[in-house]
Length: 173
Length: 458
Figure 1: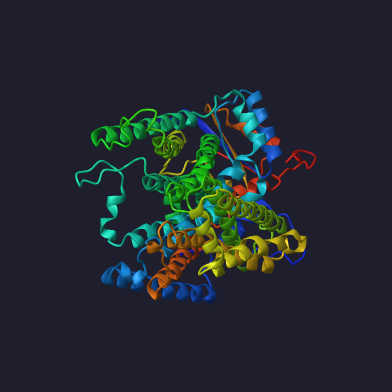
Figure 2: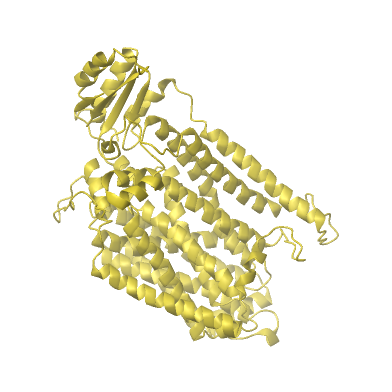
């Protein structure tokens, strides 16, 4: 079976040349890009994040926090009702006695929210990965920037030209 | 066989060179080289002390809690002192990694990994003490606050139950934060090593590749974790302080305690960061990353927290005196003038007087002076917790419950051994994991630009 897409990888040493390549590629209509960077770089993110929604990790964080709050309230309130530890003739739950539970609700909110955030990050970033992507290069975690262009077969040579013209050190398929 | 690639990056003394991205990888990998004999010598000392720790603990389990010198009225003594001390140490790590992250204090990057590791190991050390202190640690699961059939129903209005939630949340969230920060760094280690090391790092890196799709979720998640961890830092030591402040014991029952404890925790935590980072900087030759500016910033934080602490000490004395409460005043004057006056004096000198030298600029960048001040601060902060716990319990409402606590060999050995446990964890860590964050250090460097006119806005 013939490959439905062709991948061309450009290896860059500089941020500005990488940005130049990205701008050029986007202007020419190549939008299926994977950019590898050793660190998150503002200049590159500015180009890539232009037409993307904000990461959905924050929804996980919100849900985790709410679930934590609710479960801590249920734990404390239900336990108080089960085991009526009456102090000063006050009801087991309610405004005069429940404020101390806020401490536990806060801690559980942080715990659930934090764990949910990490689960969200792992899920959205598609981790863990057991096989290396074909376009990855070990230098991308060191000091090189990589632009992988996924294009229709036959367009490879023009992509290579764009990457070289932008200043790629190395271009490979 | 496994190897670490790259040669040591030697910066000639006195010539500050801005490292490049490649230098960072190489220098961090160099910290993971096979250690020399000095490292093993330290490990031997630590191992020996840890053996004493376990022997003492075993003896205490066999003989009973009397071996720890605990008798009425001081049923809380050195173990709870040391517990609070270690929890406090843990605070600087999260302060650096979360609070300073949100404030975009970029100098944090080269010390935050070591500080975060310190946090986790300090909380792990602190976590031993409730078990040691409670005696029969095989009933440790009794601490877990859930409705059960043992007639031990948790009272969620008790600060001791809050403490269980606070400390376990703190340990979990700090660990999660730490691991998330490590993932891209471990990926960098994976790509710079060979053999079995590479295979292990490859597993731990979860297949991280640094693609744009990974970074965008990662960055957002990191910011959110920092936002969760920031109030957590403040809450944990407040909750620990309420273990005392909610009780009616004179010397404890004070609304001042929460901010007082949090500030003290940050103070002692920064001292411990310095105690760990200064030798790391020296032995790993990280002067290009942990620069004089970093030392200066940390010293300033130590100084500020010391001054705030001095203010709290004055407030504590004043409110006790001004309260007009006879018992409170009696407890205070006993503490100031009688059996434990030496401990109080040690605390004032170490916490309020010693850091004053940091007003002098050369002291803030002198590793030797900083090291001495940090050790004094650690001693002072240990005594602060001692002074809160032991003398207050020794002189409460009724003369027939007054008493003096004398440490024993057993509990002193356990306290010293807890430092061995902490240093064993930390020394092991710095040889298997990047003690300097590869990614965050690179983020503070100027990004490589071909056209130098661009991108100098960092």
